[in-house]
Length: 310
Image (tube, rainbow, N blue to C red; front, top):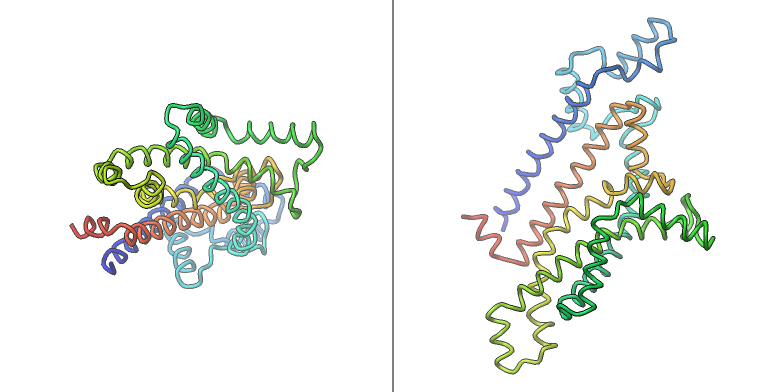
């Protein structure tokens, strides 16, 4: 098991290094100057001081080495160019709580409802509950979040006047964003749980248990559910990362001051350090989530460890 975990950690570190390197050089290869609009009316010496402060007067290779040194030794992602004095790490720490609250609630709600609907659909194959669940799943995958968000805002805020359109800080501000963010998770888990349950229910050991007289409810509880849920764990890593990365548009629609909101703003402002820092954070979150999922899956299913050794 230790060898299995160490191998996954090495893969994670290599992936992170690639993400950081590619992001850094892609951002610095974009034509234009992030300080041009801010410093164009300043005296020449002041302009040079600004460029020296952010290291933009150095070659790209040297900038990269300085960035990696600060990141590895201090955990420092730099200072925002658009908002001098604001550290990127401080922004990530503060606003990730907002995104994490909204996305985390949406993920929990989506898993609970999606798993329940998947079980209902599998146990009622080719009957009306199955058709209803699949319609919900198709809508959850095909309907864009900005369309769903606009429809909910119109219905609950314009027509019924029971929920606020935008804002943050009150419980009612969470309702619509959480519903919008959870819709895709509901659809994903409903489809996966249904297909996995149907596959497991056709296995020989299930037929053997039924032939021995085990009641259908015990077959479902003891054999079907556990084996059907294991493959669903593999998609959980991406779902955890989507707590932050999947909220860009939703946070903009509902005026939520989360990471997605600031990420879009930093792109519009050409704030290099904020864009790179946020991208590195999202990449690290994704690979760490995948590492945790791999370890959990390896614990629950020893066959994964055997494959890793091979």
